[in-house]
Length: 375
Image (cartoon, rainbow, N blue to C red; front, side):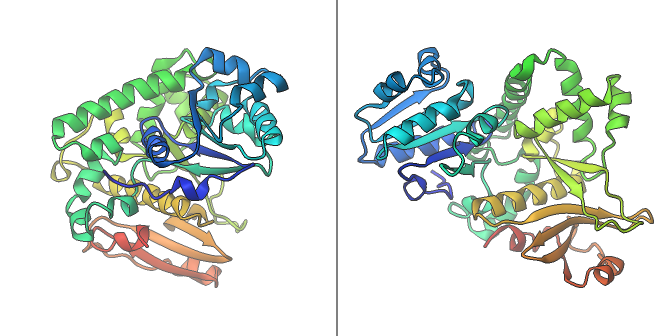
């Protein structure tokens, strides 16, 4: 079994709710079950899918809520985003039960983040459990083996079930199920979205634009819907852990493009599943896009998993100068370029380095990439 980087015994505290966000089937339930199988705490495991649980924790009835958790040292609620007013219910619990420890999980941040934000201000800690990070896979494979499997990660991604499946056909079947059940059911259920074909067509368009600036107006024209609807759908896809937005870096210099964004998929396998493209790298014309998507999200996982605070952007000027990733951390800027081929020539962005004297430059390829996503 591949161990996750988060150790729940170190994160669960009295009078604080541990919130675990992440896509469905990213391993949240497995992580919880491993923790519960080794704890000496008297615990109660419940789910937001349970109608009675929704009624109790969403009731704001002090007596009813406290009776529900009475006698337990640990309460775990899976799929908590299903419970209306869950934040207020959890506040009642921890305010009236100072020795109670609480864990809630959510497979989307659509409603849960809004519901628990204000009621639990100062009373929660949040972690994000994504598909396996390379740092976690290092527990099973050494660095040489990770590099040997790079093509697999670029094509099939790193969802737990996909990584642990040996057969190519099994990986494809799992990804097909994830794409169709997750994208077309969970996402569409939010806000009663009925335009399933339109939403899926939007996801496809984004899948073909990895690494490119995206115009919402152009997407609206292609999809024959209004710009506001495009923006709303993209926001839902972001909150549902399907895509990640990268904004442009700018200090308001005239020649810097600042308004557009780029979008990456949280998992390469999902991206390839959307466009039904699982060919090996030597038969593809999008290897650069796959590598860039992989590196962007692996870096995001690395920062998140290690509680490192940094801001990420891309940079481009009207003259055509561009940088894949600008990472701002502790007042310093790192300009980063990704090129799959180790033989590709990469020139330092002299104009960026000249404008920002607190900046440095580095580039990563298929040979040295692990330096950027492993400790």
